[in-house]
Length: 168
Image (cartoon, one colour):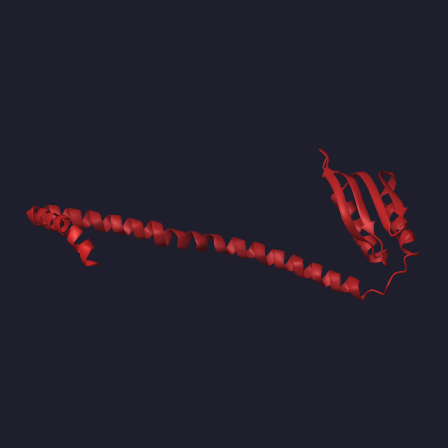
């Protein structure tokens, strides 16, 4: 402590010591216990509770992160598999796209323009869209470059997807 600070607090410290000495032993004990309880409360609130909260929240968070890691690893494995597939000729991609789109029924229309394809759809389920995307990535080597869709009140989707064909 600096000397100036000591001198500034000296009168207050002396008054506090004098007041402490004037207290009865029972009052001193009560104040000591109150200060100890207050100190314990501060330790619990500042150090122990945050640590307990972290311990409580860590297992579910770790499980969530493990699931996310597994999903990312699956996507990486799928990407490696797709990279290892032989090159697809641009001329074969439209036929593969059309074949995959035919399975979606009349709710989906495919428009081809150069090395791009646009799928416009309505009333398709998420499973139908996911299956269609997997098929066009595998068979036509097409990759989505733009997606605009929305979920309807009945749980189906409507919108459009723009795909870049292999070689484009």
